[in-house]
Length: 456
Image 1 (cartoon, helix red, strand yellow):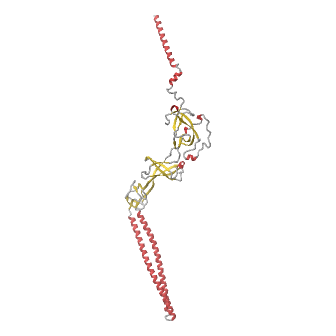
Image 2 (cartoon, one colour):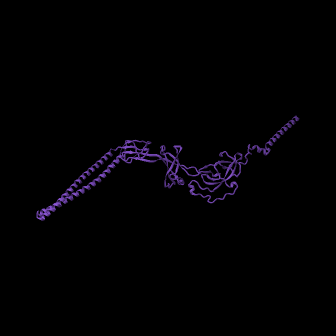
């Protein structure tokens, strides 16, 4: 019994020793591998390839305007808008057009009852005829008076001759002194009759002058009545389209009532509000580009026809009128228009300001500021750009492809800047590849790796 127990104890000890040995071996396999082998297992394949290359975003240099073209919104209007109003009172007998109809200059649009106007005109014409008859009568009387004057003159001559003869006969004693005196009296009477006849002629001539004045006045009355009668027929003063119709046929209209409103759409105009800072871009007669939301695939050429001399004192906005040719008349009133002005500027290479590298990043001493650096001219701001704080900078140009891609530092001359961009006056040509963004500072000759956002 004791020998069996001892044998079992021996087997259990051997088993425990085997388990302990296997556990130690397993621990050794996990914790005591060489460091180089562990690192080799954790590195991704190809990590050694391109080791030290900096990832960069690459852009291709191209010419462009420094800032985006600014658009101003406005609403289309007819070149000319005319209100047709009643100038006479009466019933509207005819109204020949409706909203949207096209009309020509001189076309009859409406007719007002003119019976009262015709009666007034006939009365004025009758009065004029009466005045003319009066003139004829006065002229006849003047003619008779002149005949009488001539007769009186002949009678006076005869009386004076008789008086002279009787005076001689009285001296010779052939006739009495009384007869001589009577002949002188007859001569004086004949002279008085002549003067009276002449005065009558003058009075009648003055009456004719007054009658002529009354005729002229009556002619004016007739012309006025005829003009009023013409107001019963309403014609179009322009060629265009009917915008509104304010009444209907059969209504009684009063003087001044608006019946129709016409618009001349041979050209359309747009009034926009321009900031005083952008006023330098606008000149009278200058070209403008107009886009209409109603015709999204078209662009229209316009011209500046009016620039207001006064800005709004509160908003500092200046009204500017732009006119657009509209030969087909398809541009109506009230359309949303977007206006931009053509600039006579030379496009240069434009890059983001962030692409310029700092001198400190390249391990160089900072460049001393140049004279007038950092100053800004208010006139430059008004033109949409400002003079940059420095006139020179450095860009990194990419050479080579793939594994051979490297950067070369290139000094560039800077121009105006705006909206986070700057003009390159020299040192960078269109088509050159340059580093637009990098994760860390670069140095001349560094190897780089192009990101997926890089331009191809």
